[in-house]
Image 1 (cartoon, rainbow over the protein chains, first blue to last red):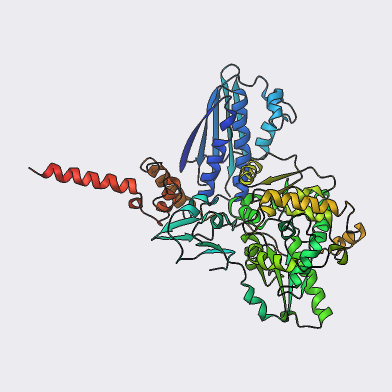
Image 2: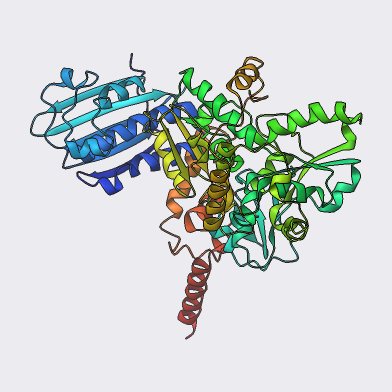
Length: 146
Length: 427
């Protein structure tokens, strides 16, 4: 059940470029550094980092460009990832474990095991996905602090 | 202050910033003309000791004169010691030569390494996550996890180290065998690095070290070389050395002795890259990671004499000349496993970096201040302020440990502004 969303204490935005494997993971790393300075519990930090890294790499692999927005609330850390890209035609299918459209190039880099979206959901306390084919995908997820 | 494996000698420090720039956890600041280690961030990797050209950042190993406090003195050398004298000097001769110095006896730990490979195999096969498991052999890696990767503490293998377990066995045995009170027996590790010295002074995973101190390989190298000249030939000596265990001196050696686990080795600066990735959920398919802060494992430790390439060649040749047969029977490993002999004695806890504030709100406020400071600072990372880079200075400022005026660029800008203002006032 989604907690009541309050006014964020802190908002940080990171631009992510599709196809930029070289910097893929940088946004997730910067968010982790911020959480470390804020004293976020290591376990919460780890769960959100796993989701962030998956989201960021999905964007790099499939979308043209996008933004990862990190919000700190009194009761949760929240992330919204919105991209401009091909979108996901069948979200239900994409949420199934093991389902992947990864190319062999992506697989060679260790991605495309079909664990991305389900893994993000597993590691967050709230998870929402919406997508328009031909326009893009938006993910919202959160890990509660308490 | 807790005693640590290395320190800054104030009279030798010239405040040059070499140590601060090289520190992988940004634990050193130079303020008021003196480098100071923030020990809460320090992982005791010894990078500052290597970088210091003035002998100010130095190892705090045990002075050899401390040996005289003990009636019976035992040396337990790091396997890396065997790699210091070329490939023709066998481990048995090195052990003998140690007894020609101030030690009454010297004991090998290669067979303990071989047993630990078996114990680690058994632990990994139990199949309990989180994955991958991370080796605790390198004490600097353990500290890195505690300080920088608190979320990975649960991945550390809850098994003791070859050195401490050997020390434990010797403590048990020697007191009985010699009929001496335990406090009269001094057991000293011969260390290739500051991190192990540190792990003896401030142990992690056990309440108290089984060692009374550690002498550096570099320090005893000269006397040992002389003693080796008179050591009997190898075939006259009978100590049991494990060729498989010997390989633990170098990166890759630990996993070489493991049976069927899916393993990998990481070392040097790559450790932080890989740990960052593990925290983000990658490397899930790996069962076990051996990790070393030094670029090639223990043979490249900062307190060694032989270069790391030659040392690796030496250790491989020596291991090869000993043959491939295991030195330890499997039954012995199984028996010790049943006794829980290998288990670490205390849980390893996270020691995360102090947050920016006392609570989330204060920390967020300071994070915002920090972000506002970044564009104000020149971004040249010149380190003249005493922090290794601009981002670290910004963090120090919001923590109240430095001021914006510490930045020489900001200071010059202010002076120029003052000057212009004064000139404008002149009629």
